Length: 335
Image (tube, rainbow, N blue to C red; front, side, top):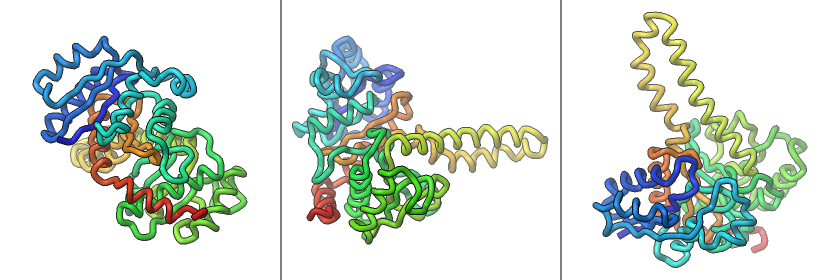
């Protein structure tokens, strides 16, 4: 039996959304069991709701949970008995292959780093996920775990991404850094310094700066950035995709002939635009910790939460942490 831990607390829509997603995942994965962490007030409801799956779930009652507006520093000092911390602890203790949380991103990062530790030479983990581009998926990190990043941290993100790709079998992943221009003199001091260091340390993989309009060109395998820029870029793309759907619907509604063709075009466009929506790409991997940790956004509904759980299941099956550690050592300039 394959087991993952789920922190059902902390999301904008409440734990019952997570319950529905968990039931959907249990139905579609008969070899899966779940460890659900929650405050005591929801425990009895959970056991009743999952009455058909009692042999495949374990409910851990916690005294507290991490709110979306909790400060990470406070959580690190006082949140060790929270549902989030207890869920991460299941990975540390070997009871679960991975963990997912819908809660506070900063809190998940500091608790994961504190409980699980980090990989070789990594000071701060990064939220990472693959986004679709013209030719191939692009691993983008950081997407919000670190709003500000030093040059050293940007270099770490670049190495993390390259190591992840190499651990997946890519021989020579191409790595870039998000910037406002391609010239070496463009961007903040930290971004410029990161570009200089990566040119020296990872010349076999680093190809230079990437502007926002080139994210989807398909030329890169990894794009490193600070969490503020990465989060804005990703959510802007999601918002643009939604706007395109609405605008095209308006165009089709303007003439009878276009209206007749709308069902055909709508079906084709949905298949393309679905790749960019937050529901389809609901999960992000907290890359850099000694374990498989996935964060889904706080507004996740049942469908988005289930998509993120499937993403976690996939990551536990494809991510070899030992191989990732070995690739990080090979890419470490200090070695």
